[in-house]
Length: 152
Image (cartoon, rainbow, N blue to C red):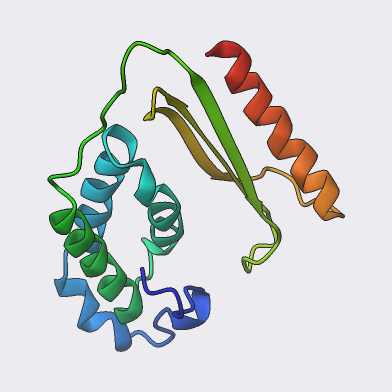
């Protein structure tokens, strides 16, 4: 996705005549294909896919351009693979939170776990609740990350 672009409902078509052009593009099928890739082999596109899938009912031209950028990104990285180092079996986890920067005011949480340098578990999702402070957002994210770490 383009980092400087704004993906919100204000970019969606507002009049019934606007979506005539976008009805001819396979936006839903493209999102489905990209979601499959995000879940199975490409965790790095998970956040972009969750953002773009919010506009399935009323996609605009900006969203279709972002979908095409996602396909270009995947085409350019199709030779990249997960590799594991020698038999160390080291589990390493990272977590991050994006406060309420989205228009829905829910924080975006995410984590990734690596074993010997290869990704084995990841998650990026909108938190269920609206928190009142960034500390609370971090606690919720840490709780979800700790549960996954214990399971692993």
